[in-house]
Length: 350
Image (cartoon, rainbow, N blue to C red):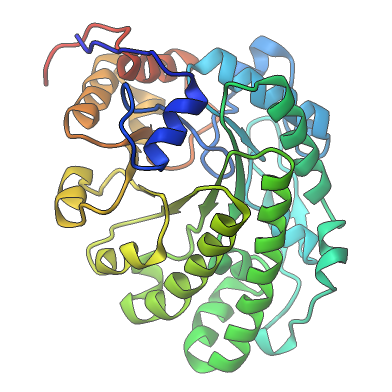
């Protein structure tokens, strides 16, 4: 049995780990954004539902509170998707349904050479940006001992939601001048958005950049665009007084050596990444993850518990789902994961 000490508040625990200080145990979180736990079981239990909560700040805060109170995750995270930035910058977004997350219905521009944007102050007052900021303000006031995580889409992912993704990926190599101009504009907006979240009470910022994986970009392009611009965001959020978690999807073998240069306070990875080996290779990293979302959806429960226990035993600093959860993931399976990390569940060694 895991002997959870549980002496710290959730905010104290996560703050300590992100500061590379000793904590009573690993936090167990689901940061929000692409990686959120607003599953159907939670929504059916509480009556606070998507897609309505995507566009109502008070309802967004209620649902984030429900996730915290029902799942055992030790944070509050908003929003529940990664399209708010692209919507504010001009792309058309389909808000999805009770069972399906929002998606970009139409990118704003056909190519990077055609892209241009409003002034940042105008962007900050567009789309759902103020909705998310309001939710952060409500949550930070209502739950003073629980860390509020403000989530933003990463620079490459946001750019790929503004320019047709297949076109963008070609132009990152063929039209570097305009690609850097566009992603630079995106980053300036993301930085101000993140500062707004911190200013309204976010205790940490999580940047999720699923398009910026080693498989999609390749090592050279990953270094040129992902590392450079993620580092800019991390440094700016640090200047605003908050730590930053960064999620990178996919295998990391070809790009792992670049990750420390990003400067994130924690690095979240997909389930296929061996976090114990990553920590051994790069001891300066704070590792976050990486319980398979497939396993969390389909179980069995005892394997979920063994997996969570192994991550704790391997010294993973923050335990979390490896990627975005399916809305059909059962609340029971999530609670098995969180209870195991907290030391409230007996498991067999596996």
